[in-house]
Image 1 (spheres, rainbow, N blue to C red):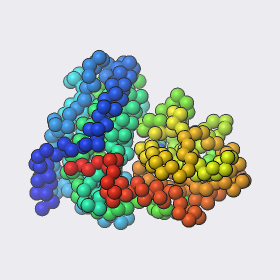
Image 2 (cartoon, rainbow, N blue to C red):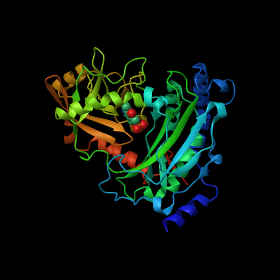
Image 3 (cartoon, rainbow, N blue to C red):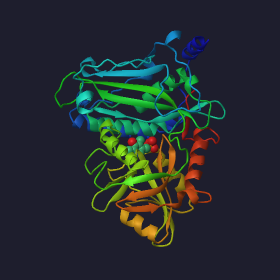
Image 4 (tube, rainbow, N blue to C red):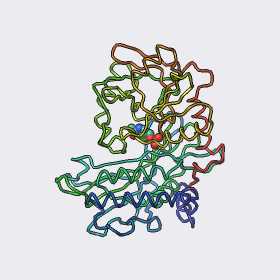
Length: 421
Ligand SMILES: *Cc1c(COP(=O)(O)O)cnc(C)c1O
């Protein structure tokens, strides 16, 4: 039964031709694509041969599909009790890039399977890897939607340029991902606290040890049904802020979603847990700027020195990952026009000063995985900075969570939510 359902889906004609929101972004995307393609060729890396030509890309219309056999299909989990990123669906997308074969090859959707890599593959030695994190949501009307997917595609291409990996058309990848999600659509949970996490990944697979430009790459995407990101739900979390550690630095890659940014954080996160705190607050520089919390962007709501209510998030100075959730929160709150909204530097000094004057109101992290994550306290040197996030009457983080999920789950019509069918 499952099988025949899948076949029908795959045979349905004209799939994925209605990504209107994406089309409207096309102009803007083309300029980003042109810029990234130029940057890639300037770095004399994978795209060098495409110099002066329109951007080389794979095409959704070339996609071939090999469905899993019935015995390969996994049982669907219960939406309650899903843990982040532990279970995967029945299929995956793969697109290879080989310069000697003319660049991008045809996309293929296959049963979920292990990768076979040469032991010298560059990804395994020099972490030539980048990824994206996005979600498919099953709306209250049963339709499945993506949230601003073109933003993830732009960011993925920017990460590719910095990694010496080939760029591609985000619009084509969105269509391929939509098809993959459609094939595995029974995996998109029927629950408004759950969703299907989409993990597009791009790796360098050249079988040679030189630290040099990439001639072969693999773009693949896997899907994972997820529940609430934090098992504690909306319990405000405690943060460890230890200035001896830093996540990113000027001129580095903190603003790209490259795997090499995350490995060095695992030990620090573990140390935070050992010291009894839930997440790491990443500081930077002599002024101890707040940059990010865990793998989320941060927001602080406070009364500033002028006595105004102000929502602050660090500006995109190269240390900050340009989150889609961050951007959406800025656009929503600026549209509400209820308080001042600022992208600016915020330091531990300002946090302590604001605490001493009783002017901290809320603090929360923001990202696709959790949407918003309220913060209760920062543990810094031998000081505890308490933030009354959890004791506000109608907290901002809750309003934002409701506004964003209403869009994602189709409770309101909004151009940010793109149906996949
Ligand atoms: C992915 C990520 C974010 C959040 O980005 P979203 O697009 O909102 O999911 C923030 N910080 C870091 C370090 C990240 O990796």
